[in-house]
Length: 458
Image (tube, rainbow, N blue to C red; front, side):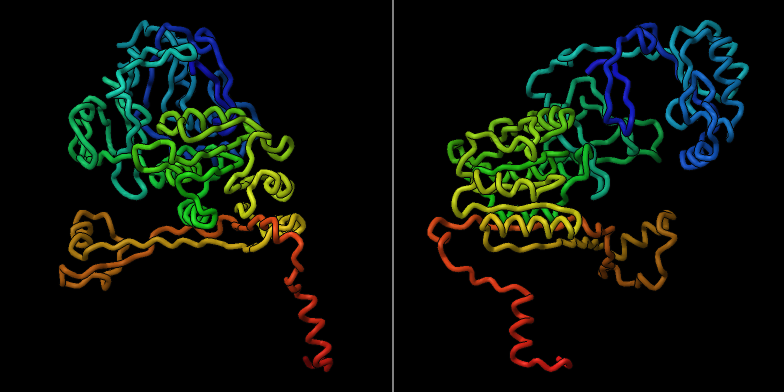
């Protein structure tokens, strides 16, 4: 919200004044006739331990090893065009600087083939000063091309443009002109780069595929198991901690919503996130998705502070926390009798601690699962032949296709391996508390077997 300096992996944001980043004087972008492969720049950067040439960014040290002329180009942007704050964009090779170019034509003559954009005006806004369009245009939509190419448009805005590798998609070509399932073509002068996309309504599954990863997210296989294991449905009250990127939250909310006109039949999700920047972004996401009426999100460290006292008789609790075993007592205190608990832990050592804590607190029906989801694709052999003729599938095996155009070719899509372990348990009913424990440990089984047949061979 406004000018900011981002560091780390982009998750550390520090507000800056416009004057600190060049003010309102304008910017100039210069793209040399050559490019720089990012892996090669990082490789060269990793070799050295010196300081990057100033005022360019840290990766310049690797970039100038591959293209020393970048430093000359940057110097002429200052000396010839009179720009200030010249820096390299990312890993290069594009450079930018602040100011109005003074001798633009002299610079272009000296560097033929170099593209120069000299009319860039930075837009600075204070918090809350965003474009205000009527509600009909301010929709959150998705552009879909394939299972691995889905683009989010957070809000359609008149005059807005969404750029991606398939082209520049103008929001004016969507607003009031297209409905769900219709195709939109990008505006580009080069026909070979045109890649149409389809306007689709956001669903929890598609949001999971496109959400920005503020943390590692929970994917479809685990989500479906969680929804089933916790019996999430309209009218239920569910607690989740931590929210993270909101991948699971959107599916929980969708399952809790009653798909009728009576909103009193909706359930409710209470979700908690201890990291404040992630909490702020998740809250903004829920508002954009239209979920504000069915979810309550709070900035809270559940491990240390527990849950709010007013949350009683919850139907289900889900823990995605660094140490879920420390919160089993908290879950028991806030669940109703017969309520369901699920923990999400990446390693089996944590699972053992979770199960021990659940058993100590009197939970029953403790089970642990690992979900492995394998996706498959199917393509007609006729389509594969057309793809080959365009030279896009040189690696395909010749014997994979026959002359029969009605045949189908199946193939496995990229598969995620281990994600985490899901452990489910049930808070026992009041009249079960005094019942004898009929569970049998492995040690008891081995001891009983040894008494029946004490021979060493067995």
